[in-house]
Length: 589
Image (cartoon, helix red, strand yellow):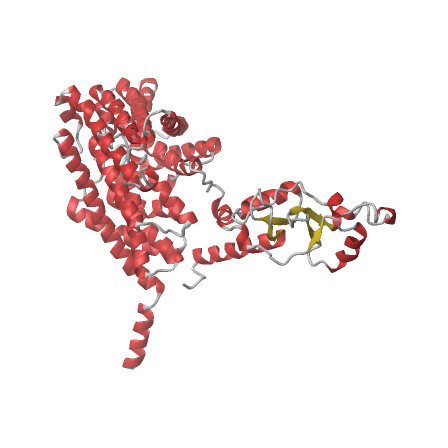
């Protein structure tokens, strides 16, 4: 092979999208890992200023502090958060995984680094001051915004940009839990939404790069230190499945509590900037007696997993952590729900295990095993991510037998939650913001395409005074078989199709008695230019109309054009084919 040919092959390889994505994914993984390290160190710094301790093991230190400090520190942190959200943060609310899902589904993965840094600051202050939330959600958001910044800087196509967003998310989760496999599947399962090879390989590379950097700086120790648990008998598996059902109920109560708290806080006649401080007072009051609820709660979770908590405390902490997290998120503290769901799941599983051991002492395994299973089941049900949470537990424990029990309980919990409420916490959160993404990619496409994309400006218009005889003679020349009827001011009156004339088509005696206004359909709502195709199809389905006149606004009713049912379906089909081509890498960017 000559030198020129080798050079040409090398240049072609360097210009290949997959090679480019592999290199960029590794760089993004490294950047996100360092961002995760800085994020964790910053939380520790704020915690040191607040409580005088840098380590995550906060419980012992808080019990030594005066009551006024325990109560006022979360309130002071809430005041800082409230003022920052009011005057600096775009939208006035913390950001997390739901915003990443929205960006992936509706904005081609477009996210601003400035928003990520602002959200990270809110979460650092919140968690450092003791807000009862998780650090993984904000870290996922920050990782996604770093990937978004890289996409804009490199001028990548929307398809590659969405893949790179998955890389940032995978590196975030891998860095948070020292769990690279779980990071990959969380990104693909929760946000990207598919497992196409074109996305899988770069996401794996980013997750591995992030893990290597974090292990180099923070060590290889996983998030939780667990003893080796086993399953005593196959007869325990019905108990694990029952635990899955219990965890489903706990997960739903947890989610309902958060959204109920948001509604209550929103209705309060208190300035928005003061609400986090008020929530901080409530959290501090709980923490005076039960400091386990402060922050991410890993110390208490670890204690439950290692069988160090009595039954009464396990049960009480389920209630208190649910309340504290609901107050924190409802009052707009920064942070996510992953760590709290792990906490609540561990307490639920531990309590269930103790009760199971009391009933069947010779069959039940140690209640620490049930705590592990419960931790996974609640988290999976809340996040809607069973594969990711199962893999996290497997990477944390390395125990195959426990992982099988985790799979049984997690699948039951996830199935029940999906059947009862039909959505994960993040999709429920998006619906509360007016964004329904539960219909999958197909529904997303119908929501992103608008009337403007299919508007036909060439249409047949007649006056409302036009006699029926004249309309009959013109129908044979209509390409779509529909007239738009207007009044003397050229405003919409309705539409006439051939079906509207079937009862009078063969009765000449009515030709001089009836005009266009008498037979025009006016009951179908006329869509506006910005309406989505999902809304248009719903109107067509209810009204039975296949052609709808489009107006400027409901007051004016000036006609801009017409929308045909066939054009709507063709636009949707074209967008769906393009989306499928991206997923299977058939489309070359």
